[in-house]
Length: 461
Ligand code: NAI
Ligand code: CS2
Image (tube, rainbow, N blue to C red):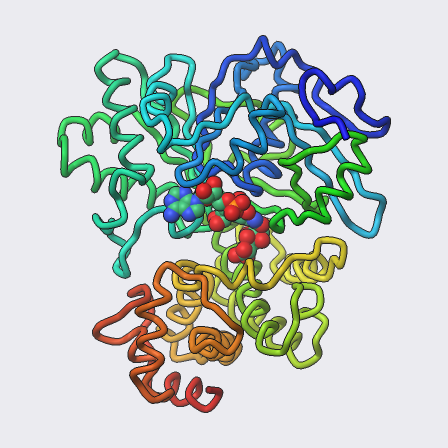
């Protein structure tokens, strides 16, 4: 089968949509770190649509993306032979819809050519650096500070420090640094952590970054399972061309961005993104309701032998826990934005989770729990604890996570897997919560269990 590329684009099967703008005429305006499945199905997809819509507007074009992989060459090998082209296929109970996206120009593998990454960040045409590097990619310690051991040569901080230093030296404007990861206050955390790193090496540069760069917060939402070989085969049938970088997702997408840009932005607002002054109400609702439920589904579902999200959410032994977690616990901890209907939001989330066409694997959600549960569960636990209220659904999910850590569901994929599993081996189940959240805490400082929390969880282990 012929591979998707600029040259073969004219042979695309009918019914597959594609970009209409002249890619070659657009400069690279965005450097994206972590060009994984989500970026391709979300920000790069929005940017593709925005360049289509942006002709003649003040946001113009010149927003093509240079992707950067910090760890492996896999995505570069998938995309560069395709001239950066790939497809996004939406799957639901309706017929699948595929679009070929043209917004990515190239993918660099940072360890192979670090100078090229720095040069891109320092280029006059570059206006935005964005990130989907996973929750663990920010190198945070349990207290939220930067862990120097994780902020070394291979981290984003090294490249950002060098690239921004070159911009300052060349008297170029700063950049918008746009985190699109599932972190609470993702923009604020990125700005603080980068500031910690740079202040250690050049206090003047740290001040320049604080003055000249912006760190808008974002809420990002589109369920994007890891692409499987079966997905690639289905997409090939749809396109009539092979696409090694295909991503499969749902029809739903949402992007809420704080409107603070150092040098402008693509016309994202013309293609469905929302520009707001404060993203917190949207981000907190999404992290605590959608992602909080997702992680609970992952550990409870794996514990009952399920593979996919849609199976777990249909399980009558699990569903009531998820509904309580979303509505009586997470939603109850929120201050909704004007017009935000959290009851309807919960119903919409349950319908999205039930989409059997997505084949969203629970093991994908279960990974990196130590980096995810603080913003997904612990903020809610702490909120109700301060008010003397219990959160039995989240505690039930927490017990399922502990069973996961002790190996009930197989190998544990977490940057802290060794110390976490050591903690669950060295103590009796009734002491596991203290081992993880006690004095020698391994996991975030957001919440400390009470005696009743400890007893509740221990009874479930
Ligand atoms: P992916 O596995 O396809 O891509 C992950 C990217 O992060 C890769 O480029 C990888 O090299 C990079 N990465 C991983 N660990 C890193 C580290 N320690 N330092 C620097 N880079 C690192 O995953 P996907 O689906 O693209 O998701 C990435 C992130 O996007 C998620 O962790 C989440 O924060 C966010 N997200 C994902 C959604 C989804 O449904 N997949 C939806 C909403 C947000
Ligand atoms: C999931 C998220 O893998 C996970 O942790 O909970 O990637 C989820 O699919 C997205 O946040 C949905 O927007």
